[in-house]
Length: 253
Image 1: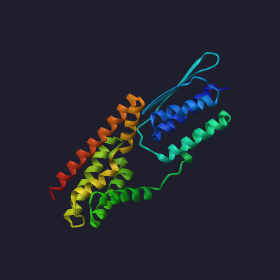
Image 2: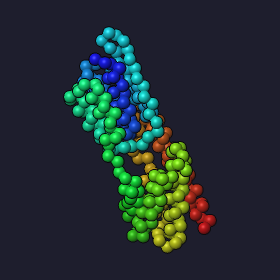
Image 3: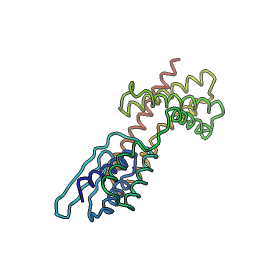
Image 4: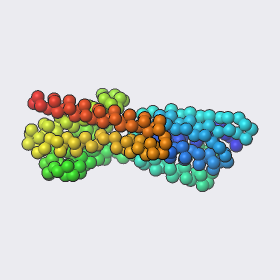
């Protein structure tokens, strides 16, 4: 058994799971099950939102450790589903390590991606569905759709101008949504600034991160839970600051 290859493959799978937005317990349990399937009795796996550490001891008593740093990431349900399916297949079949490594390395390329047009449409449709829930009428729904398109375009195509800092990116997008909502209402397209604004901002709310944080608190992964909670609080602060700035700017017109 080539334990170096096995450890590299397990660490890569853990990395892909974490990068897709998986919960901490899912990452650790998946990697442990994978290593158990290849005959290792007591593997050690430690994961936090930006790091995965896998350690095993060979039958000869030599400890081997791999660490993968995970960059800033969001949630990719398609990739998460493919990682889960691959982990189950590898645990059931335990194929040769070269084949398992190739399957794991091919995960990002094999995961289907939606085109930017469909993603932009999704950013517009989501606020349009929220507007009636908040008591908006037809024209509020139309305005929310337009604001959602603006936020989606800012997120999808404005990365090179905004930068990679998620706090400033979220603040700028929320400011744009609030400003556009006020302008649309003043132009007579929308009826309620509050309904249009909050509907557009819903696409920026870090609901998944906060949900995972609460789940990890209950599971006892305190460090990871605090990290995710801090991210969610920063995102909420950016939304609030950006919306306030957008409304202040809109009041000047």
